[in-house]
Image 1: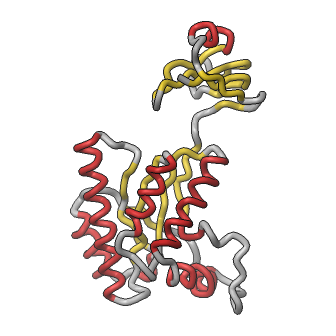
Image 2: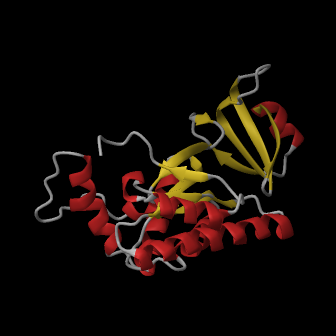
Amino acid sequence: MLLVANGSVFTRNAQTPFIPNGAVAIDGDTIVEVGPECELKAKYPDAEYVDARGNLIMPGLINCHTHIYSGLARGLAIKGCNPTNFLENLEQQWWKIDDNLTLDGTKASAYATILDSIRDGVTTIFDHHASFCEIPGSLFTIKDAAQELGMRSCLCYEVSDRRGQEKCDQAIAENAEFAQWAAKERRDNDNHMIAAMFGGHATFTLSDETMDKMAEANNGLTGFHIHVCEGMN
């Protein structure tokens, strides 16, 4: 058992929203009790003490939209990249990155993004992934990193017509296979740490025919994760 203490607890409980000198008792993956530190230390004398050092103790943050494929792009300078609008930013930077992202690169990007997230107090992510260099298995690669590091994750792959029919079909299949896996994992193993949605990006690169294929492959299994109102394009 852990006792996270020596901090102020933000509870999100309407009756007791804030506990100065509070503590949180955790047994395995379950929060057992929240209350004043003096009371919980007396109640759980054998718990391992985690010192919050006077900081705020609060529930984990949720990142409702992130891109793991950009995890290694911080500080990256691409020769000739000088975008003046949204479309140029995609063409000169992000699409060049995902066109060259292998499964190994995806795994490294997942580790970088998830470790940064944990450091900054994020415990749940909704990721919208693209790695048109290697599509099959990419969501499962991210899933493996998320499970290893303990990050609750909702994952999808961004379907697009921009790299031709074969890549488009692979992206649809990756979404469908992963969504089916996640549903089975939840049903058979009661695993609620990993979930799936069906991704598409950017919407102006998606034909009506492709969106029909996405809907057919999804078959009502999960929701769709798309971008809206990103730019005039």
